[in-house]
Length: 446
Image 1 (tube, one colour):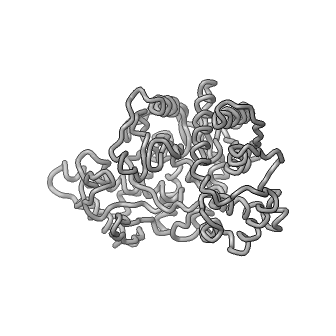
Image 2: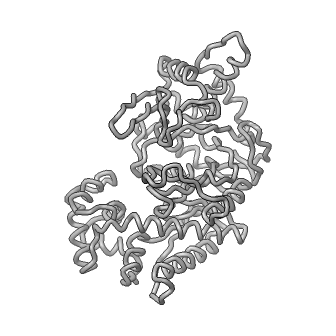
Image 3: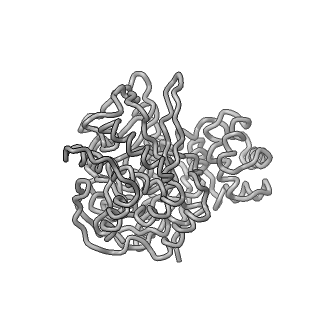
């Protein structure tokens, strides 16, 4: 179940209208995820963990009563004499379970620091102004221990390194996952449009503590996107963020928990809905490679370069896509072969694809490191798509090189994506005319 377009709201204070959250077959696919999947997370795309946020269970789900009953039955949390301390324990306990519920459907470990260490910005992890899980180290550790002792949660202990640390990782055991999965699609995060939704990961020394000015176009764009988004409804509703690597001039990728929903081994993402309607995913065909070739002034004019390379190499298109996903970020074939293993592409297959690429695209250096620039251009394109779509009162969600939208809007979104791609590629060439050729595909449940 779920809700229609609604206002942003604080944890536990949403007032919404009851409508279906997902198409019926999602329930079956979620059960298959728990029953047939690995007991512990094995990510489809290399990402294996997430971090805590203050979450709430959408009231329109109709599951509040069942959720609180589950909380009461799982473990007995400490009951100190002061009511304020009782409420603190209960709030942390509730947030840990909500965060673990979101981890079940995204197949990600939940990272929680085991001590009050400093984060990348030099701030303490635990403090009164943080999310509930990080307000009290003592309370959080006590509840996590109770869950572990009860056999409800796995724990992988973190470790400190010279350049940082790995936090403790937590994930529900299969028995707890079976109890949480019904709530998972309805776990949401409050959306308050803000410049805080822009972030630099691993900032270069010159950009540590960097903040965008309120009149910066990136700030205006992300606020516009989230202001529109907070009135929409979708599975794992949360702010749409833009993250940059190193500095504010590279790789501004748009991210939101929705894109972590399984789509390869389990057809979960396509089985959710937006604003009560079935969704379609509209994606670019071989986008990074097409951007790279257009950048070189050699645009690909065929229907599908990955399928063409698969035919030349005698391998599957999936393997070509897996290899190409990492190859453009690598400096050598050796490095690419190692990275492609995470995409389920063997060394031998990687070598076949590399030879096929050299044969088909003579004189083009595949291992150029251009992948990081392609990601940047891709981020620019998708942001432009979202802004153009919302101008037509159409909501879109970013998914790597694609967007999700309500099925009835897919044709309009298709045209927007084509025009946005051409617009950004023309900007790469400073407005000089170049034949820009790309393809988009629409995927939906029939």
